Length: 283
Image (tube, rainbow, N blue to C red; front, side):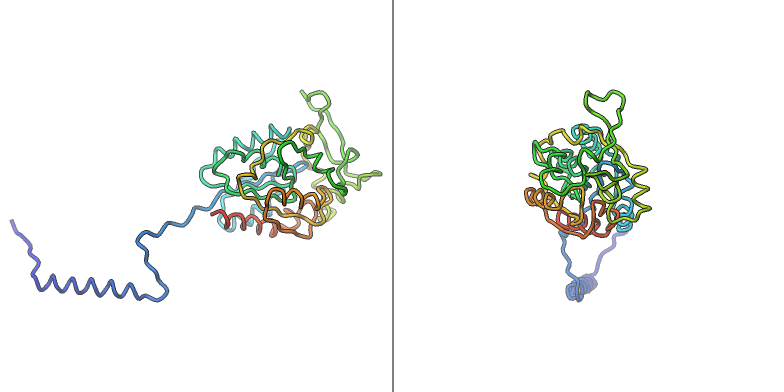
């Protein structure tokens, strides 16, 4: 058996070399070495919840921009069947997502996320875009009418029965053309978009149950989760003054943009910007 021995002089030389390397690393300009440095935080999943008379495609421009930045984005279908049903559906969906979540809601979708995120520790931020931010007991129709200026009243709806509807309930479609108290889909819901875009949205709108506007909201997630709010100052659906009231009540970080109710379509960069603010503040 052969035994390899390290000669004393050779060992001393190796020690000197190691000390020299250590000193060199310590003086590399602009570099700080930490033995216990933490790995960077994982990017959250961004969940986009659409509102009434729309579908997940309303988030397309926002989704494309966030995906280009490397974020995992999902835009699930909001059933629009009633606030408790819709919130439970989104809540169940959130339970399937591992890791941190930034939850975003547009319009009626704001009421949905306010309820769906309650009790979910993975949801790190709530982002509202031209949205309802209800407190417990509020209704969507009540918030719409709380201050003057909304174009959505009883005369705005075509009511269509659906199978199994409870007594007095129906699907609501926004009327395309104007009447005495309603300016029409393009001027009310889609102001700020081209006439071609407004016509396409009007033709493809998804109805919301009438009861979705009258069902009281539950305990709000914004009491435990930080929130951000993008408010379109030319919104004709939810009066901006009411949006500001709801945002201040929730303690939200507020950004305003000169846009109508569909700022997620007309000003997607503004929507992306406020989502990224929420990401950066909660990562």
